[in-house]
Image (cartoon, rainbow, N blue to C red; front, side):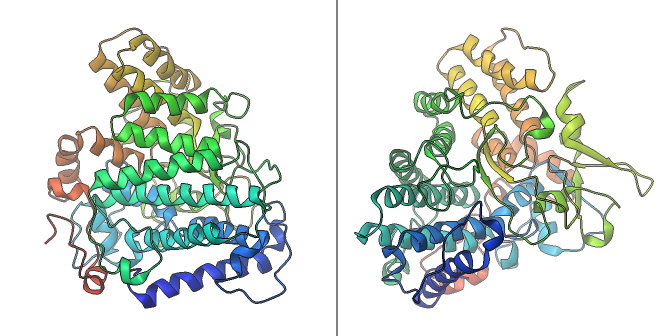
Length: 485
């Protein structure tokens, strides 16, 4: 769906209202997350933000929509799959015939052929429109509980920043849409990435000021043990990441330190098998699974039990990942499984272990976690000339994995050690590896040989994804990603 014309922005608006209705009427089995009565009157744009319950339901609907996507589609859930497919993390089974999936894998995407079903542009902009509508509605509302309004505004700003972070890292320069006026949005061209990052930082700073330090339930006020709504520390954690990507080392250190210092709420899980469980003490922000009978799509999509399994599980881990672990690294033992059912050993991502349908929900989608903050602070300390402090944070992540401490080494050695830790810590998680290769300038060096091995020919422009022909035809103000013309 396209968001730059009146028809499609209305579609996004009605989708928002539908999400409100679904949350209010059809989630009675999830009382821990949503425990509110249905509205007594029909919903319209004028009254959605007059009532605490319906206003909350808009944001709960956003999170429901994020977690309801499938691994192999262009939903938010797919951000742990397709960038991993593009990078050096996954190997596609030779029997796979899905053409768009193969294009991502061989780094040979074509703007004229890419299928909309696995293109992120549309789904992310739909979410942006809903949160823009929320920001607009909250700004005009005078009837909400002030504490609820403040929390919801923080969540909406956080989500807009989250969406734009992924858009700009997937596509580079993108249109900056903050209005709900289709006539304004229709003519918006791509904005420079620097402008996008400026908006992200502005939104996150405001979100950090508005959000509660603890987690709240569906009321937007009451405390919750569920870590499924962003809080003040989630905003700080995303800010730390953004500052890392933009080379603002003092600011990256400050925000990461802010999160790490809250030891009463966040700790590294000592047991690696507990990291991806719901409400893990390492979790800064998770998404609650909502698909019937399923824990997460990561478990059902990545875990192999019968090889390719008639197309259900199209990938296994590449040797670039499996060979990257040091001897006795507990992450390799806990987070990688081996399927030998076909007589050949296929390693697969086993961070999420619940793959059978109908099992009790014990795992949540992990979106942001504490280990990243230690590695951000480590990298920031390095660039600030604090080598000893940098190594201390690096070693905290290593110790949790059963590895020996790294001693004092050269700055270049520390850089490589940090990137190595990020590679084996965050494989198949939300595009970390793909983005790290780009932000560190190593992508051409690494992907030239990797792409050749995958059956493609690497071109530097392939580090950004093209926009589908459908989008370009309906939105003439947008130009194709350079290189795909």
